[in-house]
Amino acid sequence: MNYKSLGLVNTREMFAKAIKGGYAIPAFNFNNMEQLQAIITASSELKSPVILQVSKGARNYANPILLEYMAQGAVEFAKSLGCNHPEIVLHLDHGDSFELCKSCVDMGFSSVMIDGSSLPYDENVALTKKVVEYAHQYDVTVEGELGVLAGVEDEVSAEESHYTKPEEVQDFVSKTGVDSLAISIGTSHGAYKFKPEQCTRDPKTGRLVPPPLAFDVLDEIMVKLPGFPIVLHGSSSVPQEYVDIINANGGKLPDAVGIPEEQLRKAAASAVCKINIDSDSRLAFTAAVRKVFTDKPGEFDPRKYCGPARDEMTKMYKHKILNVLGSDNKLANLD
Ligand SMILES: [Zn+2]
Image (cartoon, rainbow, N blue to C red; front, side, top):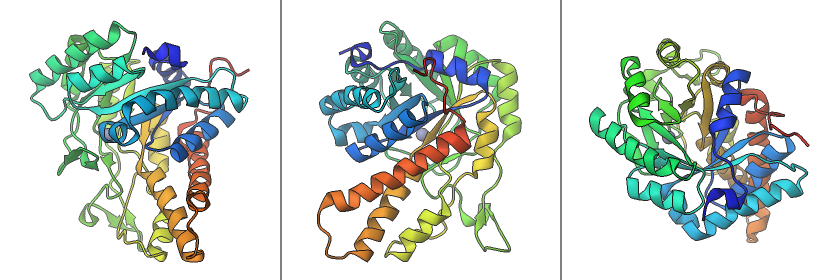
């Protein structure tokens, strides 16, 4: 099934508009109904375009067939919330093979990422080009990646980060024909983005302060690729209040640390037009569920703990749209 028949859109126009307007499109990962409800509620009420992002693991978790219809349902749900012209993308996060990307293109995705960043440069170019040639036949947009992010995210993990080399980006984009490029400038996957020894400590709170993002590398990339859509992965902020609630209610997340929101705001104002946020919704969900279990140990109706988790995620997504990404009221048709 082609994504257009599901009511989805690709990323091309929304990225062009976001770069001109100095904001970024939220790419929120989801695995289940409650996360999807929260994402669509937040983006529809705030009239924001949105990217529903699914990793290979999440696609298998949800089931690929069910997922197509969940995406179609998301479009209809957005309309029922008064968002008559929603701009919703279904995007594969970290595709690791041509076959997986093809399967997603064939089953309703409007955008795919092929992540060849761990391959030698020439192999990354060849694999990415093959995916672009297939996807573009169906007007599906493609994200490639250069540089390596540290951290762990589903099947993707790396010990150390390697910044994107600005001298490679022009060649990569022209040889592959990708529509957007994920870069590495110091963001990281997961809730433990930095080791304590990479950070300083705030003397007042005793909390870890992560090293700043490499904006000089971003600036160089923007000079090499003027107006080209840039993507940041691993951009959760790991809100301390969620970590505290989790730890106060039987959890154990010592020294979890994310990317400060003011740095993401600065990135969103540049050519960065897609910012990936996954861990923050996992933390919001887990904090809310743990709190219910502490406060009401007799509760066993999933709606009574998944409901509060959904509300907390909705609040978090709205905060990101309004205060970090600036994508509210940016639909092409606000009716
Ligand atoms: Zn990622």
